[in-house]
Image (cartoon, rainbow, N blue to C red):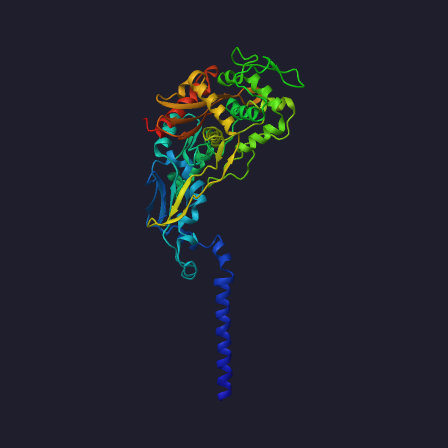
Length: 486
């Protein structure tokens, strides 16, 4: 009898061990499979079971969380959503996350291991710490000045601090309110359909995800390449540039908008944006050096993140001489984001040094303790310091005496370059109005801000669409705000 009891006990023990082994298999070995199963709502319930951390601008949160008392309990809220949408993106219970909400999702949702002193214990208990906060580099005044300056016109603004790479403003128009996508009801689905069907594409972040032909603003890059290559040694010497200029190997004649460009010195050609001079300069510099200079400024880089990804700005590496001439005046296949062109202006302002742009100053726990900081940022010398000094003179002349007069600020030194970029089949599209610039206050040791503005469409007559007329006043408003003059 005792032997039978012993056998039964052993059998029961084996059954218990089998149950424990299966439980371990389900809860440990196959846990990821169950967590990722679309039918498992526990992950979503846990994700929205506590308030999300905040995105902070100028010391104040521009996001929040609303308690719905429903199964997916907390919905995202936004303060002045359209103003900050290109930075925050959206956090939707249905459609996921974008931009900072996506790039910093782990920290904001409380799942980042850095938020917990005992991450293994959290894995066992399935608990999570409170979501952390993301402190941005944005200047709220500059952001608002850019948004109001565009005044609903389709376009974008990017502003950076040349000496650090901190992004001070990132604006796109038209915009939208991310709060419309936060929940999971019928209104959210209707908003999603409406926003995606809108021909003006309000959810497109034009400042970092849209590339445009930069037009004459690219002449900053071409002029720097010509000075660095010693093709131009004296900016006040004649350039031996015919007007019109026949594109090499073709019968096509390139002309200028105004008179006085034939053999114009670099200084005057830059001031009055002579296409013929810069097209010839690009050819004289040569493809290899033009590509090298463009890539030093950031063109063709495919891995730019701020921390969300930035569309690649391009300068073609395989061009014939005619195509190189057109590319050197910001046409043909040359494309740039507004952030890229702000980086170009910033490099001139900072003595030829280019700082990697960034948007997150630091991340913190909910109590305010720092989790991580931006740290030292990579820097590279994209042109000779002497070239940068000459470029600053040329850009200052544009604002003081040339086409960029609308960007002038009393008591400050402002440099700029206008651009009007043709596009579309046969250049039939409404031109893009560009302006890139930097500004230095009279008491400042170095420029405080570099800005790029593109106005994608306008109600003005085609002949009246210019970077100096449409984009420069927007840049001036942003620069005035950063310099503390508004």
